[in-house]
Image: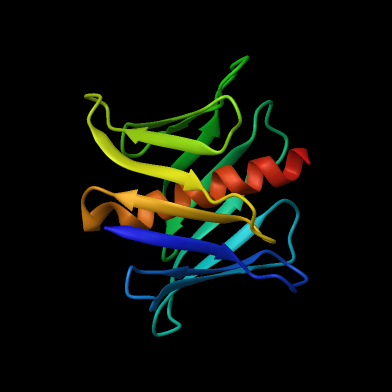
Length: 156
């Protein structure tokens, strides 16, 4: 199952639209004024279903993940020299990127493929294609993509 992730062009805060293969909006992401990044994920009906919050005062970037109001875990950037790497503590997932930080592969604790993330080049805004192996993992894969994008934006 593929999701298409597109950042909106004119917004004060980060906001994104996430589409399915049929071009229907599946999720909307709205940024909020806060210390660090705070992104709220809404389903197609406009109901708040998840939040991604940047933790402040950490050595490497870290983002807490919430489903509803319940904290389910975090995404942490790992120290690496040439290829970016992120760990997700609540699912045992791990994401490794390529040298250019455009494409990522998400693996579970047994090394099995969970999802792949590809940055679409030559777009005016950040755009990604998220190919998720199991539909039940799409929200968590989306949260990881948001954390990766927020970490990259914070550096630039």
